[in-house]
Image (cartoon, rainbow, N blue to C red):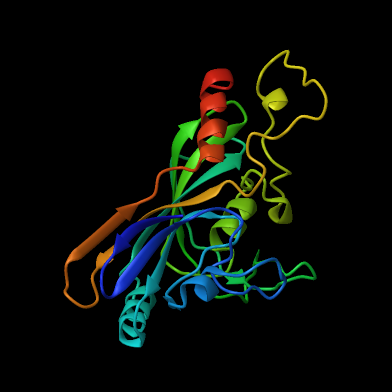
Length: 230
């Protein structure tokens, strides 16, 4: 796991998929990053999501960073590989979200939910899929996943929100026949915390960090560009 930024007040890590940021209510599978680092988590991303996650090295730094998040002064960009090809190029999704809205503990669009906003932009289109940038200004649980699912474009590999079990080469390469059990190109929720930007809470300097795609997402995009380009 790589460090993307570190100083006496902050630590920004490049989290691999499959590792929790904090202990999760419905999963007892291994230690979380908060337990490993013994630092103060400032925000969280889902266990299956890869990419940027930030920690504070002191209670004061955590308090100041939490204030920035609450005041929507932190710019966050996620990249998601979604099912289907959106008709829109850019879209603001302002649908209210209710957390734990059903027996599966899903976040759902609901008129009695909390105000939620995700800015969306299509980065690349393929045959049957698209790469989308998502910029949430609110921080509801599963916000990007729920909004994209509601729009009819669930994230690849997101079985909880209707995105299927992953991306397989046989679905995009015409005439391809797998020999034996076919392994997916990407077998998890295809969501990556790509970029974060904010004013440093202690010294006021501008902090901007990006995270490279992990290998599974790189492979999926490589094969899509090769066999499902438009």
